Image (cartoon, rainbow, N blue to C red; front, side, top):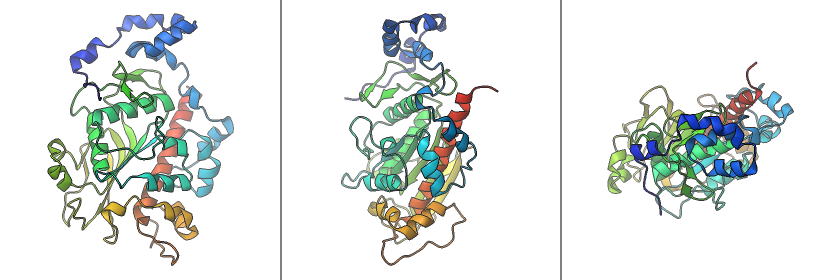
Length: 357
């Protein structure tokens, strides 16, 4: 059962007083204290990150090569020889409301393109795809847990209702619904008794609310189903993207009766400084078929086009006779963004690990 959300008052009561931090060094000197720190709420956890991202430190050669890459222009060779050797962000794939249609085929596409499989699978049950019938506060708390433990901020890609949940989680992180969100441990599938994490780059304590993700994508997420499912709080927020994400891409099929997407529909727009892109997909694509992309990585022609793809500069999509090229556009666009932020997040961590110069 999902635990009750913490009220601001409860969250404040569970915060360790600043004076307790003077005990952090002695606590680390014995095994008993380490166990105590692991079980303690907010403040005592700060002692765990003396070295930013130590558990995910790449080897020196990979780190040096990483800093020479251009995140906007990464080849298949860059992925295989450099990015494969550095920390990769967790990718959370959220499926739509129709249970038989999951994001597993899209997960297999990403893996075939070179993304680490263990960074996509749920660490508790091994699933590739997560339900969109979930609590957005729990998702926000999980994303914070991933960042604290991985040293790189996670990415979220949602299909249909999964896109709605991803956007709602962004509003959660922006503080739209509450000012305190519990950290959620995906290994135990339970809330922890704290509403802040230790930033793995700075070592500072920071609340879950206010965390900014690098990249989120919503695929065929429309307002019609929000109305039919009674998701009233998201109707005015669905197309408004807050600053809790750096880059957001919304994909839509112009004539999509399931999403209720028709010509002239409201586009996604930033409420602040987030970079927001709207991508219109061909009318030949189908709403429930959008996660099907694994075949595109298996064909030499489509794979090469995807590897070379850059938004607005990739030319006409290929149409080889021996493969279904449906879903090529959003598959290529998402892969471009995924490898870009894989590179950028690993670079952030590498720079933090080097320390001040």
